[in-house]
Length: 115
Length: 113
Image 1 (cartoon, rainbow over the protein chains, first blue to last red):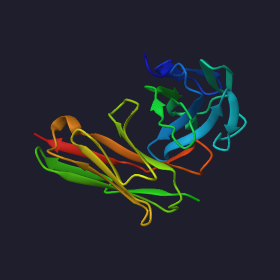
Image 2: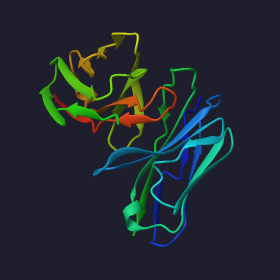
Image 3: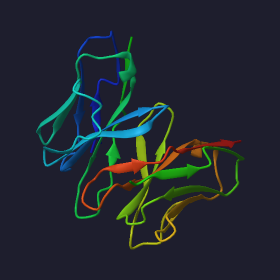
């Protein structure tokens, strides 16, 4: 298996522009997670899906952030409009949630820079 | 609210040393605990997952222990190598029925040749 795939790997954009990050989870996994990592705040969960349904989006910073999972093999995280404080590394992870066992596997991340 | 703390924040050791990384959590009602490794500029790699019913897990030179009652886990690395240099993070679920992980800030390890 190729693991969790994220694109793009790097994104540089200007403030006010729309940014779309993409994720393909591991085939067969039923849970998908979007995280953001910064030096100041560490690794934070933004939102996660179970069977394509958003379960917990309490970590989404504000209305400028939105996430979708139209099917089991694809998810997007969109920021509109982007701001410099959104600069971070965004990770997608997936897992096969079975009862209490749900080891998470992370993608390589997208490094976002908003100027 | 679950909080996870890792001590020390950074560690530098000579090659060959055995070392211990510490992780503590405030709510002992966890289902499992996961240790990850993160190399600079890369994603997280899962190293070990310990279920709440287990006391330890081993993978090669790595051994992770879990003491739920005291809210602690340790990651033991035997005979450290320069290739072990990375940031190590521990994470626990925030509640019993969600996959939401709460991460510590990590311990950055440098193993000097």
